[in-house]
Image (cartoon, rainbow, N blue to C red; front, top):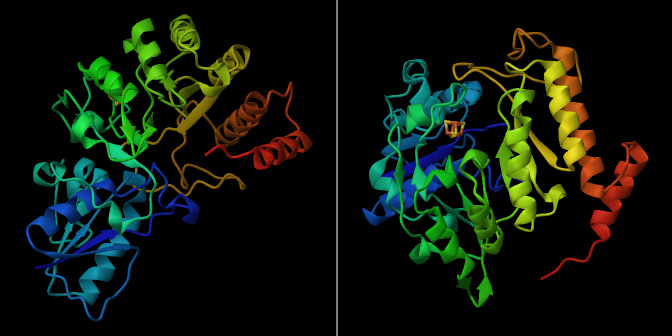
Length: 367
Ligand code: SF4
């Protein structure tokens, strides 16, 4: 059977295509699964017609609900060009909004995680990457209201070991909540002692880490396991600052320079602009960087955000306690503050930003 696996034309900048945050990992696992069954598989990014490859099934992945339009475009294109093929859509948007997704004209919607494909190793030979993606767990033990994880993966499942899976010197964890894995200490011990091709293994996490689960012992193990750039979440108000400071202290104590620690923040959400500014200021005092994330509701099916022009809620989601101007100003302030922290400047200016970038380019690359 011929299977075409499609990643729609999502607006991912070309240089980020194989970036750790955007690898179509579900499709890569499906590719292995179908190959094992003896199927012929092709992976395509965007909408392309192959005159010499007529698939029986076309499996289209989806990402954020606000990128639904790209999925619909792909469904339309492949239905028109391969009318005899069965078009199935899976992934995040399909799982969160199956009824909306069905209206795209696809033949079927796949909700949740494909357990059979999940057991397969991703077919990395279909993409050009120098890292490996690992899930030590699925789902999450928490139920944050802005998050879709627990809706898509309602059951929390974890692995005891990943030792036999390690096939690269760089691992990216795709866990939603890495530290919630009850065996995390054992896994970090494994990483600490692991080598691949005679060299040590580095790791990082695509999602932030749940600082509430951090202990001095876990922080130390993260560092010893060569876990890079820990990002802890500060989801709510300024009132959480003491707790966040404690988490940062544990990481600093474990050996992470403050500037390599990120605080993950949702903005355009319940804490208003002024409260977020206080959080921003606090992070500056602590000398940590910010990983900001603009909130969009889980059922938002469009996002035409453009940082360079004035916009309204017709263009993208603006929380009632925010405005377009504040959303954009906050983003700008985060960016500028991160530059000052990263390069150790006292204040931000364009000249200093250019200087920082030049210094980075001229830094020797260590093999
Ligand atoms: S802890 Fe993270 S992954 Fe878990 S529900 Fe909250 S936001 Fe989602």
